[in-house]
Image (cartoon, rainbow, N blue to C red; front, top):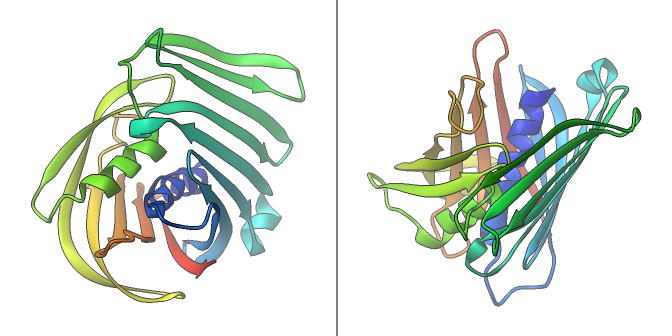
Length: 239
């Protein structure tokens, strides 16, 4: 079910983009996930200045195959510089916790992944980073702020705690998008995080943000190899 988590994390990235003063302290969004023509998951987001929290769960037939409940929390400082990540992941019988701490003063990031049930460390790593680096969520906050027009390309320093890359984002075209929440005028982007960049898995990532001041994320699509399939997330509710 990693493919659904990938999509959910990217959704969190883009949904962060709607935070812009003045707004209420907390906003809530609900997205539905589709995989192989099945409604496979629901994603709820609570967005507040400096912190974003995502809850992902499988539903329907997919939930009977594997039950997933993931909670992803990220924090950032001024300039959208990442300060921490916490992923609490329950998938089937597995329960894992991943913590990433970005030490801006020391220019170092620490990654720790643990098997909670077995109480043991799976992966521990430290590496040097720039004074200000972004996880994927704060990187797309930068995208929201910069608003590259179709035809433009930007690069943003991104680290997940295990790798550091200069992530390329292409602004592709203006498109109309229909979701359960309505019809939207959007700008379509492709972010290059797969194929050995941040993630080893082969794939393509597309994000649609509304072409207005809110820059609301309304659709995310991850195209993976044919034997895995495509995951599409669409906005259903905004509160």
